[in-house]
Length: 200
Image (cartoon, rainbow, N blue to C red; front, side, top):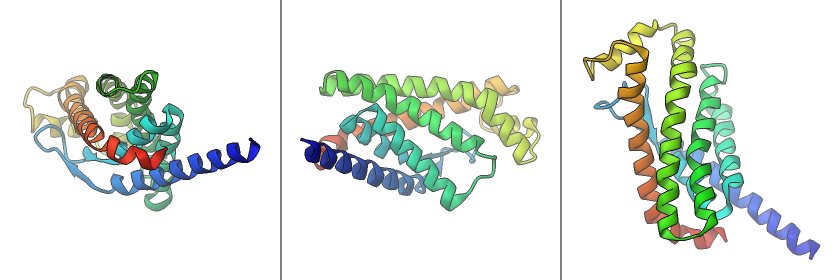
């Protein structure tokens, strides 16, 4: 019984580590959405590995995969924001994956998966609003020596009505996160059943 438990734990740990590494690699495949947000907001696919791991092994695994991704990124890329951006990336990623995987694990059906993904997208979007307004935009302004009005001006170049930080967050950050959530959700629905046998 003890050997079986140890083997199961080792396999679970190995899967989490592999998915964390995959998430880190996917994080490097990124591109801006210039019709929605300034170019320093880039869409990547790292949350796909986090979400698949969360669906297969639960919300705790999703958090660990997210953490491994962020740690690997710090190791190989370093930080320009004294870990503020990386902490926000971790928390916003968890805000997406944890609610989704919690809802899916209550009853593993396609309908529950979709319900979880929608809920996770909404929670991530809300967290994105809060973190960008109170933490990320001030941090970027400080560490990159950019006046906050310059950042707001980047948003105004896309949507001319933007003239405050709040309008920037609502008009640029919110649709960006909704698009990201939709893309990752669609890919999760398409790929999860094909990949999940490898994770059980």
